[in-house]
Amino acid sequence: MREEQRQRAVKAFQEFLTTPMQTLLERHANSSAESGVLALFHSVVNTVPAYRAFLAEHNIDPLSIQTYEDFQKLPPITKENYLKLHSLAELCRNGELSSCDTIAVSSGSTGKPTFWPRFFADELQIATRFEQIFHESFYADTRRTLAVICFTLGTWVGGIFTMNCCRYLASKGYPITVISPGNNKEEIFRVVQELGEQFEQVVLLGYPPFIKDVIDSGIPRGVEWQKYHLKMVFAGEVFSEEWRNLVGERVDSTNLCYDSAALYGTADAGVLGNETPLSICIRRFLANNPNAARALFGESRLPTLVQYDPFSRFFEVREGTLLFSGDNGIPLIRYNILDTGGIISYDEMLNFLSEWGFDPLTDLSSDRGIHQLPFVYVFGRSNFTVSYFGANIYPENVTVGLEQAVIKDWVTGKFVLQVKEDGDRNKFLSAIVELAPGVEGSEGKREAIASSILSQLRRLNSEFANYVPPAYQMLQVSLAPTGDPEYFPIGVKHRYTRK
Image (spheres, helix red, strand yellow):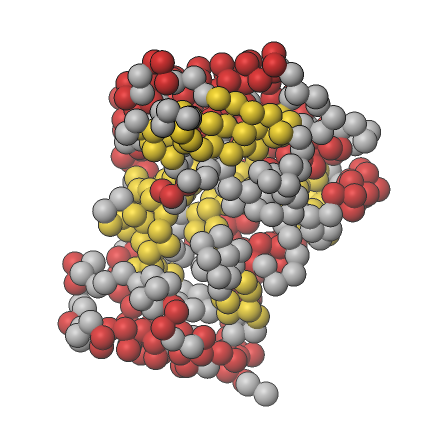
């Protein structure tokens, strides 16, 4: 028996159960997050063999890191220069893999899947991100709530991790009941229809395209989503505000800033940040004002925008790439996950919006979800774009074209974007679009879809509008049936671009 492990679990759980969420979210106002990340650095140096070896390889004396300015000079760690060079045990506290009680697996979207050990206490600090959403967006402290886990179950990180965090909220006193059908649509329908009316609201948690597929498939099956006062938690993919409108419309959502929320999560370190009613309100304004969005983010696409607790996950930006530090089963210091994006302080964000004549605080229907936490915006990985006449074309731009009136009923929202060449070696932009189940393709539909995508590309992407000669702007759209094995194989994580 490991008495130290038991004491660690008891202490962490007691703190989670007795510490109000508000107290945690206000730490940054009374203490220095920079001092906190320095303390984490020295703790990791003293307890993690792999990180000591990493510093030695770079001829860095840990005792020389005494200020935040010193900390900022530390080389970032990556999978290539750190994680793949050491055993799992060496990456853990005291070089002991047994100090962790579970091991999850990443999705493998960038190569070979990776193992990520963690301990019960690591999940508790991430549960606070779920608490923010359930308390401040869904009012789950006062409403009997059925949480339906629709992420894939098994060794993959999303499903079991999410289920555990929701159960911890129930332990804290929230009237939440959790059920985990995973990504089995038939079982999700059965769960919702047989149990949903015994609760005041139902929350579906899953990958955005899958949740949309569940909702769309449920409607012809007679699932009356509006009866269940449906709420949704998403993770794993950037989506547009038009997409949020569309999904909200199909479940009879009444307040889009409070009826759904996205997580910025990774297998590497759990949930790094989460959408709040405030961040959603801001993002919806920016979606309707592309010039303001470009001025704020510097790109012609709308990123995921979340708020984060710098005492839980400390963010920095280096050459347009996000670095974060945080404690976990494998503690990470200045970790480069290869996500592009940036950080904006609370005051900077509100001052910027004021210059554009918008005050989100007066636009929201409640003061729930308003905390003076910093924002992080995430574009994801740059290799998911295509370059065409020097313009970067983003999947997010094309997505909006498929979410317009009428067209949204013909398609699933999935597509594959490519730059191809014709017989004369002239380049053209190609989009293979997946038709919704039961929808037949036609030349009229194909032309309407191409025109809609072109219209949104011109509106949202100034590079496309100005760099690409007009004669080359029209996309060549092809329509494919649902589940087409070449472009849209069922059960495989979809990639929206091909080189």
